[in-house]
Amino acid sequence: MEASGQFPDEMSEDGEFERQEDAFRAWVSADGSTPYAAEAGRYHLYVSLACPWAHRTVIVRKLKGLEAAIGLTVVDPVRDERGWAFRDGDGFSHDPVNGFKFLSEAYAASKPGYRGRFTPVLWDKQTRRIVNNSEDDICRMFDGVLAPLGQPARQTAGRWSSLFPVEIATEHAEWAKDIYEHINNGVYQAGFATKQAAYERACTALFAALVRCELRLTSQRFLFGAQPVEADWRLFCTLVRFDAVYHGHFKCNLMRIADYPALSGYLCDLYQQPGVAETVNLAHIKRHYYYTHDDINPTRIVPLGPLVDFTLPHGRERLSPQS
Image 1 (cartoon, rainbow, N blue to C red):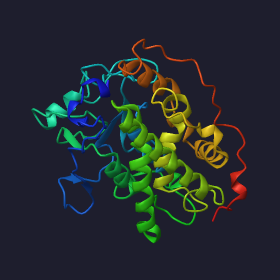
Image 2: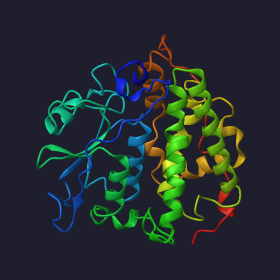
Image 3: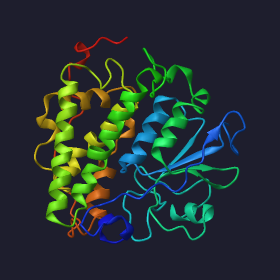
Image 4: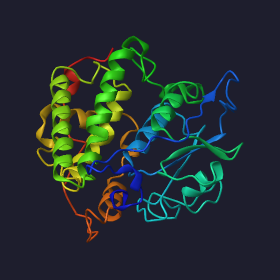
């Protein structure tokens, strides 16, 4: 598990979890400025449906209609000391592109001697190497240079065609940073903390950030009005896991998302956007966290609950009509 030594470089002396920086940050281009041209069928996404970081790339791939242009292979949600594995199972499979047994082989092929976290990656089938393992970068490429390869009917409709609208770039970046630092990564900082003070700092900051989001979403449908942008999907990937995993397993238990009127309705609203429910696999999510993190849950018992229903009516469309 992540807190038990697989990534020892990520634990500070104060017992705080400090996430490792992404190692592969190359970009796909349409103008020849990089070795990676924007071509349909050339790139492949290796992901875990349990991983919130990977989940965001799967959502953007879906929203942009890139399924035919960019392949996808899902790993086994249970990760051991060898890392993420390609196996045949319910919702995951072997690797049809390279025949890798483990995701770590993609890293070894791209950078021999690599030491660090094996995160989901965008793989180039032509050069046979990792292009990028930053979900932030991958989402921007899917939304930008690779978007023309998608199905036009699936592209974002409304006021903005991009999930990163230039009109709100500064404020969007500020909200994305706050969500990342205190919510996306905040649940991990609380869950992986090895000292009481570190846990309490992270947990307090997490719930303060959730309150900021709750207040903003009380009067508007999404973070920036009538249309979801990247920051909404960034927040969604943590919210959809929160009550099932982070509340109990990571001790983020001051409140549930179900206890926040605006956030709970907002979560259902995003879940019910076309194609998004197909990207959510709670069985993978729960099995990964409860079974893999054996320092936190040594019995590896995966709880049956809580019962969650993201298909409930939310009524949030009344807050801001679609533009």
